[in-house]
Amino acid sequence: MMYEVRDLQLSLPDMVRKPLLGPAPKIDILKGISFDLPKKSVLGIVGGSGSGKSTLGRTMVRLLEPSAGHIKFDGQDVSHMGEEKLRPLRRRFQMIFQDPMSSLNPRQRIGRIIAAPLELHGWDNVAQRAIEALVMVGLPESFAKRYPHELSGGQRQRVGIARAIALQPEFILADEIVSGLDVSSQAQVLILLEDLVRELDLTLAFVSHDLSVVRRLCDQVIVMREGLIVENAPTATLFTSPQDDYTKELLAAIPLPDPDQPFN
Amino acid sequence: MLCSIQSYAMRDTRSEIRPKLGIRLWLCGGWLFCLVLGALFAPWISPQDPLAQDLFAARLPPFWVAGSEPGFWLGTDSLGRDVLSRMLHGARLALIVAFIAGTLTCLIGSTLGIFAGYYQGWADRVISRFIDIWMAFPPVLFAILLIAVIGTGMTSIIIAIIIIDWTRFTRVVRAETMSQSVMDYIASAQVAGRGKFSTMVSEILPNLLPTIVVLLSLEMGIAVIVEAILSFVNLSISTDSPTWGGMIAEGRISIHQAWWVLVFPLIALFLTVLSFSQFGEGLKDRFDPVLR
Image (tube, rainbow over all chains, first blue to last red; front, side, top):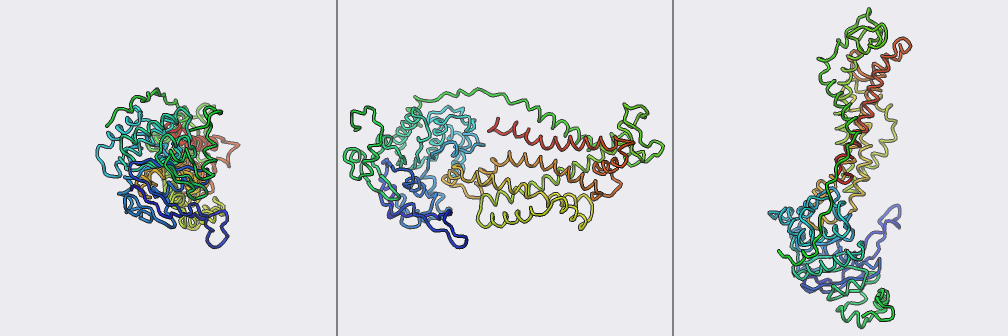
């Protein structure tokens, strides 16, 4: 198993309702999440906004620390591991961010952005490896000398992907990576991701609010609502015979290519 | 590694963009460069001894006015001292104070600001409350009081400027750091395994530099003004060394008989402060990769 998640809970302080003195009350974002993610499979995490899907993802890559429960990455419990002990593991789980403008440092060149994590993990030939990663995501080598604002949205998201795969991770979290792109860039980025997952034997968790995107990419889908998993099923089963009402609602919300034909 | 994905490779279509000419940068930089040269070589290029008094050559007008004498290009004051020579020597103090006080204020203020903005928590609370208290003091009165206590001299002026103005840097840098800290590239650095301090130095600091450079050059202009104010009220350095503020104070008395004693240092002061404040903006326009 790549990930074993057991009864994961996370609450954050609510600064809006904080009294003048004393601690702020807690809001529960994740209320007990359990699932398994086998190696080399693609998991879709879907749900409406505020359902906690991004929070779940960020907890899996330990940008957030869970308040209760366990996350095991490849058999190791990472739920409360300190940043020092986590560092060697960090290479193995990477993340692609939603907003490609904010996730690329505006004052670093693309080559530097991709090479910096490699350097940090003590690799050699970092500049060459950065260029290899660029080529793998279908960008010309000359982009290594560009700044992020000189690229289009789709190109920036490819840089985000290049940065994640350059470290040769085993797991990648893709957090709503196409939601900021236009439809044709969306399709290109999804095809790219699909190819990369196959060729690099990656395990992928794909966070999205769009079920039609998930359907093409994922083997297994988790549907989340208000911090809980309402349905966890293989993709085919979920689309043909949804069990939960909320899943049915989400499925009904997919715009159909032909309104007279049901989507399946 | 693999080639199958190259089929939809993108072309690099962006052509080389020519940098803007930056007339502002050249004008400001030009004036400051001349001033620095003038100040550096003041003892050799000054036409006269700036302290030499000659009552027979008192209140000589500048060279284009009838009654002027060669060798006294911008005229003389009521004691017969050459205005140009005094201005060149006065530039030395102005520029030394601008560079040293500006840089030190910037270093101290920005360091506090970036720590407060990035680490937040108690560091931020202590530094921010301290700023609030500090800013409740009237700055110039505070400086005058300070010099009255620690005595006159260049070090006193520099200390006074730092003490008045560090909050300017801290507040702006703190706010800018906070807005950078919530960007995803900071989270991305954490995902890559970069430590907190290293993230602050290598990811956030480059994004603060344009703001800091602009503030620094503004601060140098302000330092020139503060030095002039303190010289004007005779609280800068020992009375016989020429200073722009001191010249303006002396010129004020004889404004009706010899306007040039007041006007030339005033113009120099004005151009210098303006150049400093625009120089930073010009540098940012020219060298910030995001704006280029």
